[in-house]
Image (tube, helix red, strand yellow):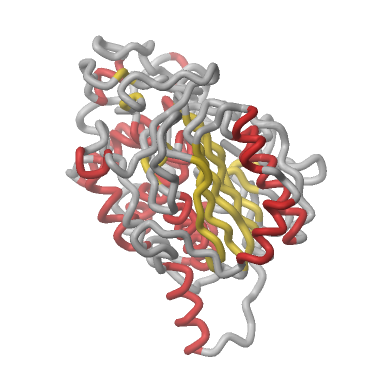
Length: 406
């Protein structure tokens, strides 16, 4: 949920060295789901000082998966625990988890891909290109219209959708226009502008569903198909999908969710048709690839999905006042970029996510070339995830302590 990115110049990298760096950053770090941990000695130091299994047992967290980034490379991808409470199938680097609100900045990458192609503008009224549904005009839209840039930075005037519970597997699912209008079988209220766009910050999943509809209308594709072609294939995110319900081909790889009281979710997980806001299935390794690619693109060294100027625009602060702090520190509180929360120190950007029975976090320090992605199949997964993040930061010298989960 919350930003400014300052990239240092990467000097003295030969053409061959740069090619190797990008190849290492993009490649899958596991074979057949097996763990790959080139930096095993330091990771063992992290684990020795943390007692991960005990923390997971105490909070009834069945499984957790991490991808640790150092020097723009995934230096450790591994899983802890099991994919379902009481089961014996181990979590591996290719186990799928729901990413929660990390879905939003990933969707923002897709939106910015269309912006740099000239197919949509950050600054024009989104109703100009929306076809299947329009933002209803009201007293708040008379002077200022809703724009894509405002939606991506949570200043577009929408106030709802802080959390979507999803739908029980097998239950009727609403279409996106039904969700936007709050029409059954959708269970949410109608999504409407509640304050003058561009006048204040208000975290809103509702606004990202308007973005989802816009990308579908402009591209002429389903949202999962568009994101696969525009982002996932370009970055090598081979284990990521916005498809909801999760297709059968992916179900065997998915971790089942666990509620706060330790009970299993009926059907394994909820279905999340609110895809851009919280419907992404992914792995820490795939999300680490994205973080590294964006950091490198902002310096002009990758550009697989976004150009240098577009990546910089995404990771620059667009809103400061009133932004909720989810990854920032007292000295460097969160600001809002286009999708990611950003900070002013070390090029920090990231997001946290939560679905029913899943929690995750992504944080990247572009200047120091470090970061980590942690995903869990528990309502309270960040109880262990933040402890692990803090211990990693200590061992790797990040000078960072995560704030309490929002």
